[in-house]
Length: 446
Ligand SMILES: *Cc1c(COP(=O)(O)O)cnc(C)c1O
Ligand SMILES: [Zn+2]
Image 1 (tube, rainbow, N blue to C red):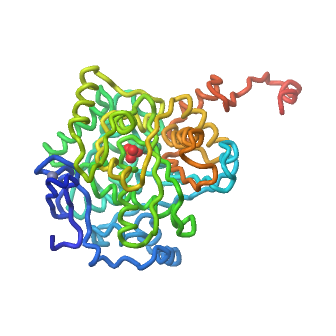
Image 2: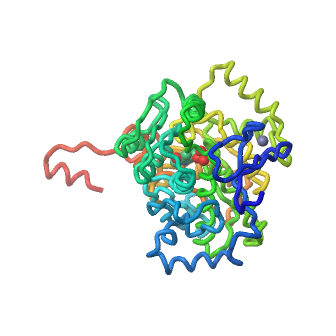
Image 3: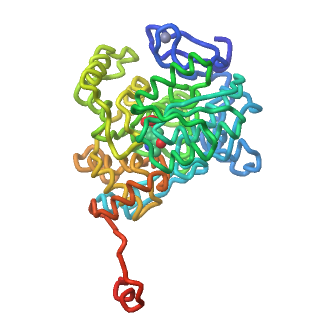
């Protein structure tokens, strides 16, 4: 390929390459996933990561202000004039001693990367700023996505800021109210399909193909380029040091895939000297990855993934009419579209996969709320998973861990209120009824 950036099929037996200006989202030749790739010799990447930090001084310029485009040489697929930004990526890495102590870790080793601070309240904005920049570059006028909630909120926000028409597909009754309220408020056409996320995902691909809409799910390789920057910001916040572990919830597996690609590239470019380990956490009610990796021994194998294992697994889900169920609606997915890229990430990062119950998720969420900045249920799967990994000795108590808190606490108030009000768990903090009487009220204050 003569171009500095291009797309390439991840299947080594195919390896077909496509222009970066094509909006295709799956290899037209073999149907596998596509990657954004670069001719790194021609990209002006700084010689050390710390050089990106100099852009804090010029944050009056919109691309230097963005927590995604500040690292733009590492996702160099689009000319600056097409780049879209609404101030995404102003997120923080919080060292959390209290939760570390609750989990029996050394007090200074646990960090929470709070992506709830993004404009639409979830990490998805990191990806959308990149995907919408690509959409502008290719001249798209209308777009669509399937969503468990946060993708629709983020797409709706970016679409109206870019002037694109936008349709979002959500599974009827499967979306948290904070997220649904955003999609409607930001003016997206919202279609509730009688089905789950996996049904929506299938429909949206066909709709996009038939009507020529720009697809914004994480099948879109340019979206994942933006999500790489979450890892750059963690490294930045640690004084340009790499942590020992990254812990992330696994749903459609876009984030974990993007993180693996980020570390693979940083290592190849000589910008880091070691790669952290990756822990991906499923909910037990939506644990395709856990089952395939831990029980069916599915591996990346240099890209030669054993498709028979995957096909057999999905055929069984279909035969049983299986639909995933978890209170962590953002990861309620049983056919993750980025499965193969995620296997690559596990390979690159010597990763592990675990599943946690809804009860564990809710307790972990309350712990994060009590001692941290709060988060939505899916995000709390990280701390619930970390507990398992500490207990089994996979993660040592003095290893430096960064958990990615993917979404804001206010996204899903129902789960939070029910947990506390109904005394569902260890950290429940129910409201107390009081008579409208000063004496009675004073007796209640503790
Ligand atoms: C989308 C989402 C996830 C799942 O991320 P994947 O990249 O699909 O694995 C997890 N948490 C929240 C809050 C999300 O919005
Ligand atoms: Zn291919």
